[in-house]
Image: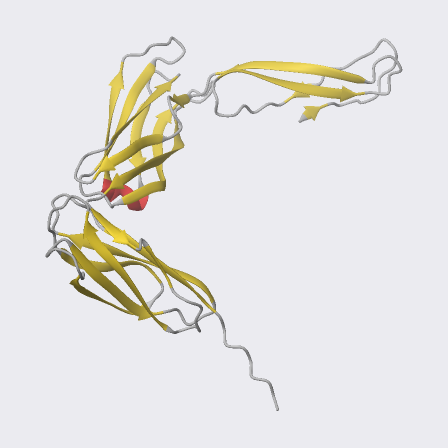
Length: 283
């Protein structure tokens, strides 16, 4: 935004235009152009160029912690390097909210490589061996640290979000992977079936089924050996329940636990659409 006290000048006079510019989070040289429109007969449009070298208080080597594909039972690792202009920079916490039980983290200091950033360190994030099976791309970690911003004499608490992305590959598979109920009335019962099978050609047992998410009631499940499958290699899982007593879409998720060592729960998601009963036509 421009700050201009007077917009009309007599010949031979002038004024200063003050601009306020807030850079984005990308460090380095940035260029912006500003167009000034006048009623001058000689030059009605004047283009001004602003250049700045943005040095943020804290910067990271990457905007996302990418783990790639991780086999269940193994530990995935992602490394993020942080640099700060404050020589007294302090890393305080890495808040993972509800996903904290699936990850561990540590922070250690590193030698600086730039005079502009005398403080440097690395955040190491690891998945736990029993992390939940499936992709994770909606987990946001919140880095919390103390640093001086700009010319401030005192440190302030700064927060910076770090998305986590990756996928844990399990040793069991579902067929089908998702369940979808046909169109039904609110409060209707539903039933979904899926086959849980081993992908490593080793027998296993299902030890528990838990309803992890969803506004359904009367949840129950049944486990039976799958037909035409070797013993302990596949199971027919049936889940039942009552849909919400309202119109609209609904979703749910169960977690399948097994006796496979260091193997996290396998999610099975289901959904449906409920339509209110049409009013009866009066005779």
